[in-house]
Amino acid sequence: MMERVVGRVAALWRYPVKSLAGESLDAVDVSWHGLAGDRRWAFVRDDAAHNGFPWLTARQRADLVLYRPSFAEPDQADASDVVVRTPEGKDLDLWELAAELGGGIRAMKLDRGTFDALPLSLISTRTVVDLGATLDATPDIRRFRPNLVVEAAADTPFPEDAWVGRVLRVGGLRMRADRPDRRCAVITIDPDTAERDPRILRAVVTERDLCLGLYGATVEPGRVVVGDPVVLES
Figure 1 (tube, rainbow, N blue to C red):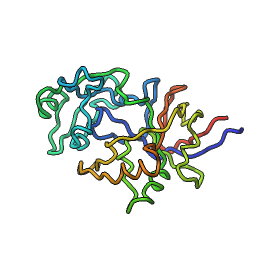
Figure 2: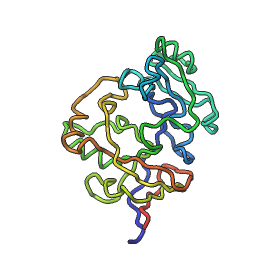
Figure 3: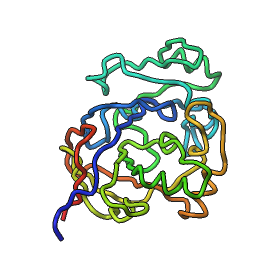
Figure 4: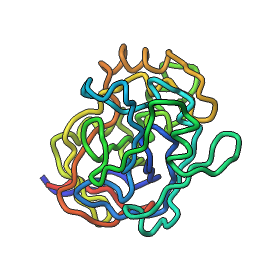
């Protein structure tokens, strides 16, 4: 089978703090541990430290998606301090934000990132449009919290399904498309209002057996720029 171009990078997103709003990027370096600066911080719930999943996420507090983190030094993301803009317009560091969020919550740095499954997530614009056909409108792609958004070249429904188990070359990055992305209630949360719409998750359950997009891992680190071709390797 020959290599072929299957799309182009339409958008890049990283999430400096787990479950907080994403940060749109024009270009980013990708290492063995995902995008530079992606999910390198998280909030820990002291009352859940021994349950195997201690992180405070939007599943518990939907309003987390309204807090917008950024790096004080974007070019040094993995070593930079994080500043968070609150919904009220205040700029706080992570310890100040932990205090604002309430007792029993503290910020934690994770040099290798804190991921629910694998360090890279990808979804195509076509897939979100296809899902929207079962609803009354196309959902905001930010609900799905991808790292890489791909505009697929072929007019095929849910195109990234066919990429699972293969290697993709995305700009200077080579990534393995390991498995479908199994979704949770976070996709019901509107990224601008934090209101929940359970129809989104129901549609993914009934139409897609709870999977949408894919998870992957780095095969060869490299830099990715919006507009880069996405090549399915032979």
